[in-house]
Image 1 (cartoon, one colour):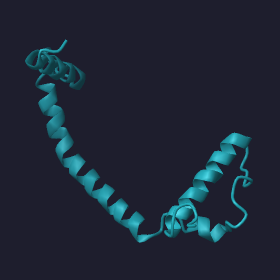
Image 2 (cartoon, rainbow, N blue to C red; image 1 turned 180 degrees about the vertical axis):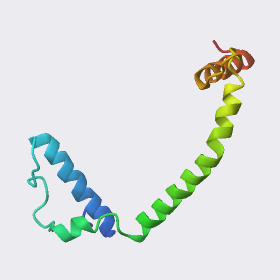
Image 3 (cartoon, rainbow, N blue to C red; image 1 turned 120 degrees about the horizontal axis):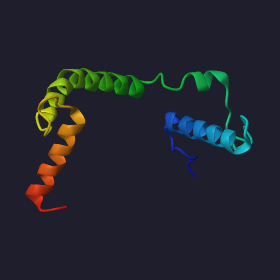
Length: 110
């Protein structure tokens, strides 16, 4: 029988951390009592969390998304503001509700 988290060590340590956090909330303090006896938790293993290749790739991907967002969000915000019924001082929220009203009108929903 495979241990929880399968053969992947990172999944196993995520499970360990989830149990630690859950135990801390349940006991009102940091408690290791809910871990199985065969799980060795050391400072080194906990400090290694988030240092693997998958985490590096995820951080790179998130950086790419942040870069794309910083380039596209201002343009999208301007487009949404154009739909504000109050064109004297258009705001994002007014444009949002203007688009909601437009969508409801074309779909026949209320």
